[in-house]
Image (cartoon, rainbow, N blue to C red; front, side, top):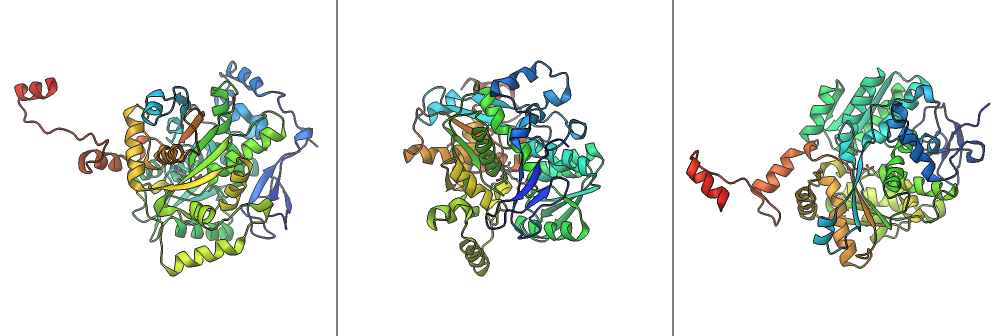
Amino acid sequence: MAAQAYQKCINLRCGAEFDRMEVLFECPRCGDLLDVRYPWDRLAVPRKLSDFSKKWAQRNNPLNFSGVWRFAELLPFCEKKYRVTIGEGQTVLQRSDDLAAELGMRPGALYLQYEGLNPSGSFKDNGMTAAYSYAKMVGAAASACASTGNTSASMALYSHSCGLKATVFIGEGKIAFGKLSQAMDYGAYTLQIAGDFDDCMRQVQEVCRKLKIYLVNSLNPFRLEGQKTIMFRILEQLGWETPDWIIVPGGNLGNSSSFGKAFAELAELGLINRIPRLAVINAAGANTLSELVNERGLRWNGGNVDQEMIADYYAELDSRNNRANTIASAIEISRPVNLKKCLRALEVCKGVALAVSDEEILDAKAQIGKYGLGCEPASASTIAGLKHLLADGIVGPDQRVACVLTGHLLKDPNVTVNYHSQMARPFSNPPVQVPNDLDKIISLIKA
Ligand code: F0G
């Protein structure tokens, strides 16, 4: 039999292994998170990353056009015949010298990885193409997710393209309209729970356990395999050079976890000789990661994570009835399901976590927009975080930084319009009122 991927519990005290065909989103023995693992020595992996460049010449094959499946050898969990694609991963790494100058960085130091260009307008498509390829391989019939919006938009799109039923759990009043409109239009069965994302996440897991529905949240280890390719594409667009820093928003912590896994594997395979540092940015109103890491000293600790510290913190949140609260609704999450994997990523990448205020997020969003790459609020936490990292001397002005802009501006137009027309912040650009009179219009345009 060919060498196969398998699943492995990340908890060192457990470490249980499971066949790739067992549909799981948690370790059946201890309840911890699962990884997808590969017997690399028995698989065909390119000897150097630049070998992937050849795939681009064969892009008339949709699987080579896909920015995810172009790297299939680095996520070899399913055979070709199961792979689904709708053109995900055609995203650009844009060098942004104007914004760099505004932040006091040298030209060529700042890059924005624009994941808003995906078919559903967010990075989630990188994961969903993998999650639904897996669904096809195991013959799943129904899928579900909890979502702050983008996961539901992406899963609705991919489940539709594979003929799977899709049920979405969203918090009441907690989802930006661009995203909600996608879930509805793509035909997902949408359940609006009287609660927030953390409530939805808890409920959807219970429902999936009871009804054996396939869960496509980032607890799903196969989904995270697809998200590794965001890092492969950054390397690709930098001519296979490693940047000094990757900066990413932190919500449920799936992206940061998958980025850490991507770099750990590339290093293990000898495909890179340097691992970039990772900065994960929380919103101040949803700052579980930065609070636990910076204030309480929580670490991966070689796999011996202090579970009690996490439980105590969540109990504390409950006792204060403290709910996540931020304008960046995509990352309005207090109980990130991938917390432990993210701690591992921080260790692999000598990473840092920090939190930024809603005002900082909105100002950064307008600065990004001014130079032509509109993004949604959560994505702008990266630039808001970068400002702190530069001010604190953690990132040097000469270092090469890639910020992942996770979602498109049009996902959440209300926030943007409100910022520009109502908030009078430093980068607000309000519309000017003018009577329906040609001379007056011209006088304003000349002014
Ligand atoms: N940015 C955007 C635009 C998102 O939609 C999300 C997560 C994140 C960042 C955070 O990423 O969870 O990997 O740390 N959105 C999820 C959703 C939770 O339901 O759409 P993460």
